[in-house]
Length: 274
Ligand code: G1P
Image: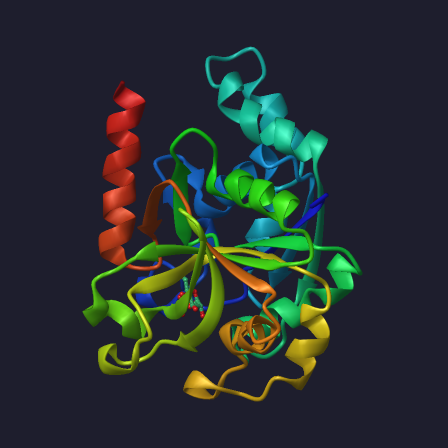
């Protein structure tokens, strides 16, 4: 049912300067794989094969990564390095990638609205690649697609419990319990101070959105930080009872911060060594 995944990837990545001066933050590797490739692989695990990427200036390396590189392939053919390209080669051969540019950084909601031209009129997933997620048995997006199949026509946000003093870093939701791990959202606030946070449930960078979100985003006024926030757009849908929060099973690394990035690196390094 969900065939497309949108990847907002236009941000400057200022927290990683100078590394991100000429390299998109989405291309920073955890071990040998860029963050965005982890996101694309998660989308594929949820049976999605059409990737829509919202880029910006200085992000061309993303397009080159998700393309064939004949010269390089020729170079490593019949050497011990040949299999290092297997995963990315399969991705390129089996998925479609399309791109549009967000010319001005007006917030996550605006980035998603910019992607409308690539998404069209069907429900879609959104992955924020700097939230690197590892599912327990199934990937986080796969779990969410399964929730969507049981609750079609709802928007779904992934949530996890955070210490309340960190609420200023996240969209925070509150709601009524529908199932053990699913809430019907009644309130959501973008990056509130702890005293104003309606709960300790934070939105993680995974969403399933219905296409009417675009009309709502078009009418959404700038909110926190003067930016158009997806959280504000979703609140107006939540008021119609159409937003669910899903407590996923798995781990999430905040690779938008140096600490989270190092933690993810250590985790995958240990996992790799067996
Ligand atoms: C965005 C969203 C926020 C969400 C977060 C998850 O914020 O606006 O609601 O909790 O992603 O990572 P950002 O981290 O882009 O500032």
